[in-house]
Image (tube, rainbow, N blue to C red; front, side, top):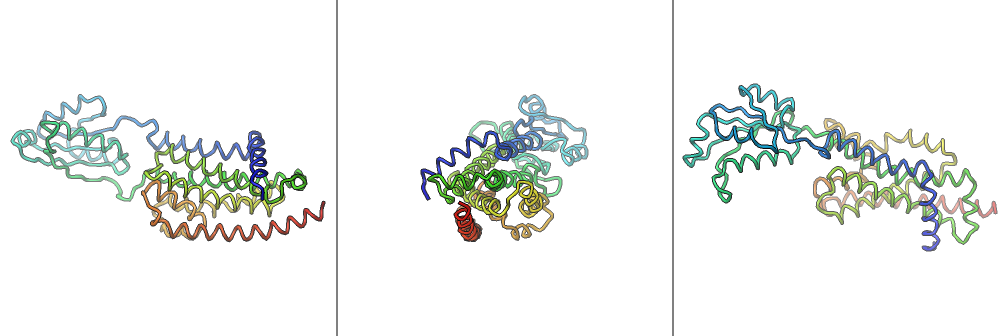
Length: 356
């Protein structure tokens, strides 16, 4: 294996990729889906936080809330109407001001406010609304809060926003399209055009060719995975660990892509194999898409050990120790695929030698 030959071949792959459908598709599809999800379900172009109020005691704070320009505030005639609005998502947060609230506040007491949260409200919108309530009920900027919030969540407690549900699918798609499709399609294309044997007549060896295609898959897979996480505000607080875990998943996907490309000789067969195996490849993301399905089922599928460490670090702020077991399984899978690839490589190298 010659690093110089590998990078020369890698440069060729990148230049040819500009006219390759699979290369462009692997770059654009995760990006387009991420932007669509962020636009439709997320907060890429988020609206003004919506607050609902029922005031049983004509509090002066109600008028001040209605006058704020960074909140969309609606006053309701009764508590039942406010609860119904929060339940259906008409407002993100509902606040009930009890009778005598202002008098208790002026007397230095700690009156209680009941707040109703829609189960799919964005955390940042809830934080903005709570901060506004704190500011309007504090006599000075340095004083402690003078109110107690009794929080009631309306809707299923297990509800997960569609952004969170769809993110695993898009992340896994970015890893698989770049890591599996690109090197596999490139290898199959070399076979169909009969250029694979021609490449081995140059100073580059067959191993250099395989390594270049694998590196291309790793690069695209890692890059698009990072882009997807950034667009969906899911980059997390441990960027170094996240890049390492994502790159390791990309290596697994790329080795599998090269392995697949070594077996398949026709692009139509490759597409058929990927379509047939798509359910297995994307099964962990499909399980997370439906929270009612027992989540342990996802662990049966190999791509779970590619996807879950990435999500654990980016969304749950997991450390290396928390995902060490899953990474060990992933490394074992990579090792097994490399061993199979070595056997195939030796057989293919003998065939090319006989053909020449």
